[in-house]
Amino acid sequence: MPASSFVPNHPRIHVTGGFDELVTARFADGVNALCWPRMLEGDFAEVAAKLDVGPGITHLTEGMLRALPLSPAGFRAAAVMIEDLQRLEAHGLQPTLDCINGYVQPEETGPVRTDVCSWHADSATCEADTWLCTYFGASSEGLSNEDAVRRVDVPGTRAKLLNLSGGDDDEGFHEWLGDHHYDLHYEPLLGAKPYSFGVGNLWRVATLHEGCAVPPCIHRAPDPVPGQKRLLLIA
Ligand SMILES: [Fe+2]
Image 1 (cartoon, rainbow, N blue to C red):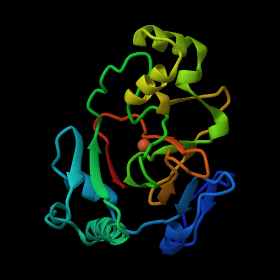
Image 2: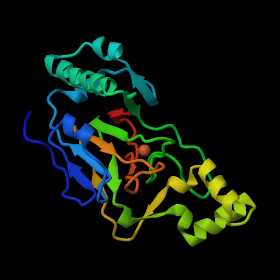
Image 3: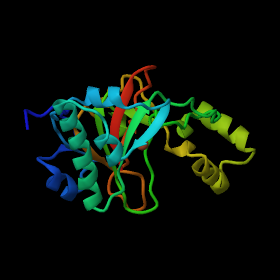
């Protein structure tokens, strides 16, 4: 594999030497993002260009990728994606390969955005992490917990939400926030410096769940650019 692509030196990121270490590394000492830096070989742009997909998210199957009329470089790129899919499946995960061709207009969600392009933490009902790799297009980004505040903790926003819920700031309100996923979305603080997940790197990031030793990794998908596809793996 050629020299690895750039991963920032960051106290919340631990860089691993390969897949085995990515799987076994622990979230501890504040580290909530594990990365296997990779510079992948193959023409991912060709794969994206040859996928005949409509707007929004299309789940890609192994069969769809194998059926594309690809050059040798495009074939190598598709093979990398399939290999990642199989690697994560063998590890007991349920990965999907997606082609994102712009986003469908996010639903109107009230005073707090809850779409994937808004800074957010993933949550899980059991011990589960989020796995991510961008193969082509703009990559996902991360934000240090120190650089962010939950939108529901911003006084003006909280007041609007309380008004909308029609209740008091009590247990019922907290449940209502959770039901609408409002409590998972964050606002960057002034001067915050997000980091890029980069292209080709495989990430395993911490979610919000009972008993997790570290705060969840705050991240977001890039804002869509009309006419530009992205290829990614998510589990
Ligand atoms: Fe997410």
